[in-house]
Image 1 (tube, rainbow, N blue to C red):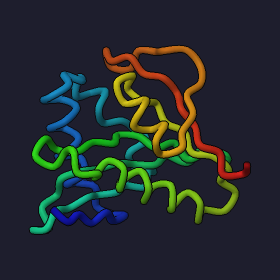
Image 2: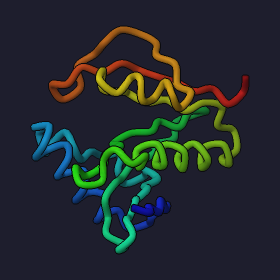
Image 3: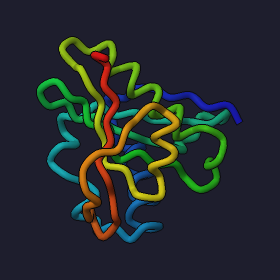
Length: 143
């Protein structure tokens, strides 16, 4: 399967994928999955060979940090590197954004290894986000 990851101005397809993964699969309350940060976020959509949406992510910029979040891939498209492609595209966007010195994210505990392979380092204590254990991670661009 060939995938394409693009920055999108209309996040409707991203929201649909997020609903399937987070609300339906992971039982995240719908009122926590969508938030006020979506309006100002940079959204990414991954599509397959047939231009079918299969993955999504977003970036929220605050000060010198781009926080990557809501990274998700539909079940039928997992295991082929799509999550990594979404992260690489988000990182490329952040590196091209003036004054951004780091990327951060809250990783689900079972995904720590995935993000470490992409250059992120965990820090801080484990915390609960929507009933799922997470840990903060970062990747610095200025070192």
